[in-house]
Every structure is written in C-alpha cells, then in structure tokens.
Length: 445
Image 1 (spheres, rainbow, N blue to C red):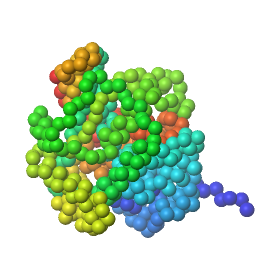
Image 2: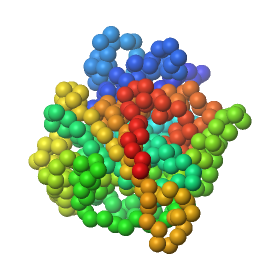
Image 3: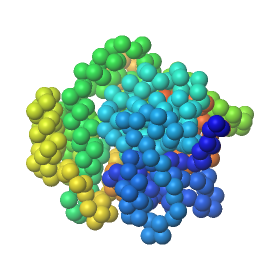
Image 4: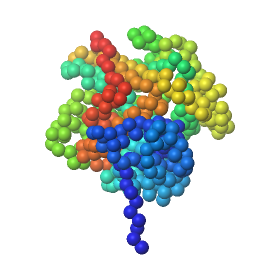
C-alpha cells in the first residue's frame, strides 16, 4: 500500500493552545501570506483539536482556515509525523526539562529545523550533549532560547560591544533588567515551574558540565571583575539590583565560547562569498566581555521582595514537599508575582521591560594589559520592549522563524546552537526594532 503523503507546512507551532502558544499564533498570523513574508503555510499542533480551535479563535477575529496537527509529547510517533510535515517547528511546550527532549529528538530525526522559547540551561546543554552531532549530520538547526530568554541579552550585549570602537575594548558588561507596569506585574506560571525545577535539578547541570569537555574561554582584556555586594545601588540608572539567576549569562557565555572557536562565526550551508564576508566583518566588531544580569527596581523594597522570592524557591525547591507547596500556591510564595492562571490581557498590555547594559572597559586596549589598570571608559546601552512573556517572546520567536525561512542558506547546516551565534550576523536586530523592541545608545564617557 502506498504511503499517504502528508501535507507540509513552513511552520508548525507546537503547544499552540498554551498560554504563550496562543500569543505566538497571534503574532504569526500578522505575517502569514503578507507581502514580503516568507511564511506562506502555517499549522497548529497540540494534543486537543478543540483547544487548538479555541486558541485560534482567541488569536484571530477572522478565524483563518488553519490546519491542526494532533501531536503529544508522550507519543513519539505523533511527534515524528509532525516533524515530517514541517520545515520549522516552534516549540512552546514547557517546562522543557519535562517535555522538550522528545520534540527535539523528532525534529533532528526528521531533519527539520526547531526553535523554542526555553530558558532552562540544563535542558539546553543536555540537548547539545545528546543531539548536536546527529543534528549536524541530518541538517537540522536546533536553537533554544529564542524568546525573552535569551535574545535581548545576546543581541543587547553585541549591540553594546559594537559601540567600543578600536582601540577601545570592553572588560565587563552588566545588564540590569527592569520590569515596569502601571498594573500588577504577573509572570508566566510555566516560567515559575521551570525555576522551581531548575533549583531541584541544579546538581544535574553541574554533573553534566563535569562530564563534558571544557568550553573555550574568550580572551577578555584586563583583570577579572571583583565580586560586588549582594544588593547593588546603581546610582546612574537610579536602580537597586540583585543578581538574577537566569539563563541569559549562561547562553551568552556559550555564544562567546563558540565565537572563540570560530572567530568568523559559523559558515552558512549555501552562503555566497559576499555573505561570508559580511558575516566575518560583523563578528570582527564583537569584543567579548565578562557578562552578568541583575534584576532591578526603583526602590530597595522591591529588591528585598525579589530576594525573598528567590530564597523561598531556593529553600523549598530543593525537596519534594517544598516543590509541591511552591507549585500548588505560587501566588503566596511570590507575593502575587506568579499565579496559576497567568496575567489578564490588561496586565499584559500595560507591562514593559527595559534592559540596561552598562559596559566598563578601556579607552585603549594597551591600558588593559598593565597589571594595575582600572577601566576608564563606560558605555551604557539599552534594549526596551513590551511585556516579556507574552508579547516580546512571540515577537522574537516569529522574527527568528521568518529569518530561518527566508535566509536558510546563510545559516549553519545544522546542530544544537545558541541564538547569538546563529542570528547575530542576520538582520534580527533591525526586524525587532521594526516590531517594537528598541536598541539605543544612552551614554559614553
């Protein structure tokens, strides 16, 4: 019996009926079949077609005729079928530690491309360890962290780095994330669940790293930065800040490590010489720096709130009854910062973020090599945009997807890679600027 040829789609959004998924549908529909868009065919995938239909109805007033694909993370054949029907799968089903691997495995096996919105370092590094070689061989490009985690950090650091014109060099860039709203700021429960599971499995990440070859370290001019106090008062920005244990710094370090091994970036699968030259020129302007991220707020009380939430996740997340409490009553342990049913549409619409990048370095690289040298130059840049989880994340994911569809020949053949090393030399920053996420130079001194 001849096999039935399944229809194929440019993009399949998997987990389309979830909290974030439905916002991703809404963003994708803006570009479906629009002039100059590389997105001509779209399908929605998930476990339940009536939930997919509800999500589509929510996302679009005109309910376009968009096909559904039934797929479930606990049913690998359904995932393989889905992957065989897609050029590109956008995975919105988290926590990725629990549900991500079967989807990556199916996409790599099928040789289709894969992007997700994961912010879980252990998952990303485990996928890299387990699937990178096979993804290269199958021509499957797998890129995690294509949402608010970790593209504002990756592109934001590169944007700051490009302001250091030779002979000036950066030594350290500290990012300060400030979430703003005139209503309550409410986070995505999935993000909270991932954080709780991250604490529970912190030892697994350490163990994975010990078992892997050491990554190359970039050469950063000047001394290593000194560890500051737990709570920092950033007077210039008027912010109080505390270290944020997010994926951003880890993803950025992986990108800088890949750049250390490939100073001209990664070769495109079918790129022309002109593009290769442009890529090498772009990467020659990126200077590595020590990088960290802090969460910041205008008053000290706000920072103490962040610390309290961090402590409760840190202490309770390390044993199973504690995790049960955290996940059962997220609102209590985060002072309303996370709740099961997520934010209302009004709360989403009124929220914004600012991410400040404060770069310290040397006006001349030769100063950096003197033992006692102190940085004498500061460059501040900023990335700004709408609410992080439901607006900024879908904007970024869809722009990355459109680049994959349109410029596939200029991107690496395959592999498990970070967003920075893949999308750095593309027009992603310009596309984000056109879609409400701005990059600005604030000051140089």
